[in-house]
Length: 127
Length: 220
Image 1 (cartoon, chains in turn cyan, brown):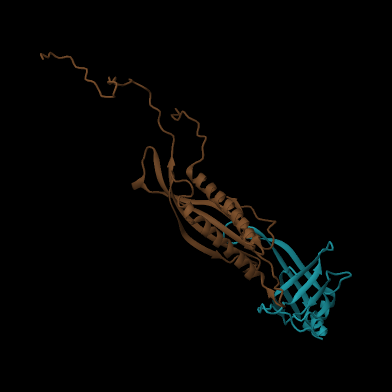
Image 2: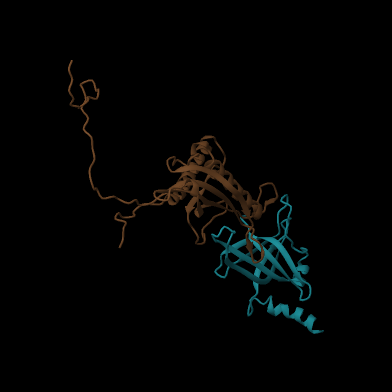
């Protein structure tokens, strides 16, 4: 096993360890409504956005990083930002550190095919 | 030595105009909500605007579907040909009416979804539509300030696509209607000291005719 393969194996600890690491449970739902539970790392922080009017508004920067091999094992396929408004988007649900539940729409999906991770860039979903 | 003897305790006209624009938008959007309710529209809140002036601090409580309007004074230049160097200056001012629309992604009720970027853009454009129609209504040709406002005319309408982490933010869109207003600014005037009071005494007959008061020799 070379170092690159070892790094992918280490994702079980560095990305998915929810006991001693930063791993965080997430539910991924495809446009057909099929769901799977995964563990990855959550990113959900407020940010200030200037809509170019000079008056800032508060925004929210959200993402979730999952392990590609774990995603493949669910059989869901690769999430992506669904442009077609006639179908539902991929959805991601996870709780904040304080237990508040949130659901997000997958805006786009960035794969790291070297390390074997996928970053889901998320937008707020009013379901 | 100071020469101005009266307290400058007034608003300049550019402040009056800015506030008047905001009041017009607030009043008329409330009326539009009332009219939409009376017309049986399913969601009269679509005609609602939240109007503010001169705001720069972040909006932290905007909800999905909100439209925020911020009226602020930008620039003014003097029309020297039409101005008086002593008493009043004719100004051409630009008042920015910024419209910020918010929207989150949501199901569309028919098995699909409405993307947040589209919702936010349509909300901003709906707000822009209301603002333009209200401000350019014939009732507000002089913004209700006819003695001091000579003209109001949109200079430009611009949409903005804000960025979040170098990608387009998907829940907020900004737009701006730059409104040009021609108005008069006034300044404190010199109060002259009275050197000599002048007057004339006019003798009039009972019917108002001015009577002559000349003494001269006359032989009928």
